[in-house]
Length: 495
Image: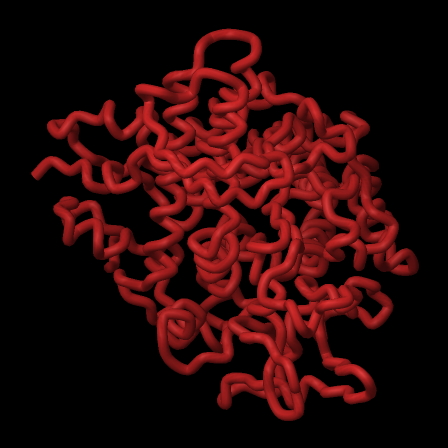
């Protein structure tokens, strides 16, 4: 049976409840290739709608967070049953709601991108929007290929897909090649700074810098498992250096400022999930603890483990920001993390501190949705990609040390890497630094996958080991697709 349901259900509707500062309109009509897009204003609408999808609960605000973050060894949930527990403990089924919503969101954005790429004219005003569409398409395929492996690829809008066309899963290497092609074109077409946004390169629209960072990340991924093309290390290092040489980005002096609403879209932010109030992100309330003595607690969907917190040096300024070990309630109560509600099988668990902004005046009275932004790429990743790729390509040379210690120096200036390390010692330091710097930022699962250590890591995690098998390094295609007619032979092996 030929199959087009996968893409036809995504259709051409843009979600218009956009949360971006650059999108002021809120149209109610549906858009289709017969009347869209024909101007820069139209393209701004569709970019705002795409950003709304990726920043929603169906993707970054919940769905993707469970698949790319909670499923790692550094994050856990307090639940003992249900879809959230099943992902954390690797006992999920093919009808898990978060697998389904993340899959659907990716293809929604891919189809919107295909519309822009297909129908925009070859005129100067349209080039940045074609670049943005290629960035989004590449980003979504980078998500699919790292979570599902061999991927169903579509490069045409849904109405261009014949009902007679056979659906296949494209190999990881071929998908990465498609991603690279899109990003090479995107970095040429995208602006460094969008017109009308002189304050910061990051306002939710992808930029030249964002395309370069994702391209560096893809080269580093292709150098590792499953492609294992070590020639890509040099490309990853060179691309990271291009971002460094742009002169647009630098580290914020204080790591804590990265997660404050008042400091959002600063010089370290390259591309982020954007939120404004009302209707912002629920990341804060979803991470905030509840438990004994907590008067206005959060939902506490996810938290972390004491053992992970203890790997941080007490001299590392990131530790107190990354982990929430006590909740201070006005005017005088202090609740220790031993009181935080947790899975009864776990020891006391600290909460995730990065997504809390307790300096806000209304933090307790209006905490369900906030204007917090969640970084996708920030300059710290550029430095770490540069250090890692340079070490893998050339050993721990001066460039690798310079990038690493620039990052380490912000949060732990008394513990810079000493010279004289072997390549393996430097590699071990880089891998630890990924965890210290990017804990809970949806990087860990992707990293342990490309490093080829996901089987060992998850088999030894107290939660994931309950159900993890090597085939679960990739997720299943949602059961709903097969119910609609997809050939069962396309299911991820093992499910």
